[in-house]
Image 1 (cartoon, rainbow, N blue to C red):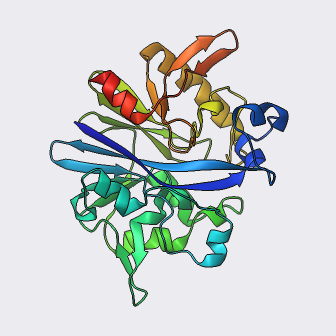
Image 2 (spheres, rainbow, N blue to C red):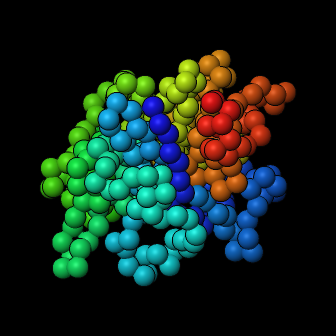
Length: 283
């Protein structure tokens, strides 16, 4: 198995929205905001190559959105989707599978693009695009709270072009890759757990956007069922501590990875480290 990890882009969002009921005086110490209360987020993807399959997890915002939309995203930096893949040694045609943790625009928008005549095309023409059935059904009939995050131009072309696969249940997706469902952030969010050289690596998506989100009450305002997130976090953190799991963060601007540890205040992240350091540590 080979793993590659790259940052498609950075963007900025309101810090209060990312930390919910936690007072700014607390979260600003560990994840500081600018003068407009905005904080930086990364938008990272993981590639898993195993047994001839090349599996991409999430694909960013994409480039279909107009200037008005992007003016609210505050995107900056990053490697780009195709460019980041290239640095890892892959072309879009190489990708055999795309796992979408969920269908909010910042996780799935790069899978479809518009060509010069406005026709929707697949960024990864040889891939199947996988999402949980629960999330798909939730996304195509969105509630008013999440509607702005589910963009039809990201979703419908996957179905119309015949590449959409709906995952019905948790379990092994492919050798060494397990998919779990979590419902607090949005219904049917997939969290991939990868067994690599005997270690369990968790691509945390929006279950734990940052290292700072490990304390149980530190939950985003974006979560549709925060009490469910609370219960899901508590159960999974206990499992992660017992199993010595390593977390790979999608949105943390300051760290790629961490372990989990018990402290007098509960289960918390270890010091953060880079993905390259992770690979070196695991040999």
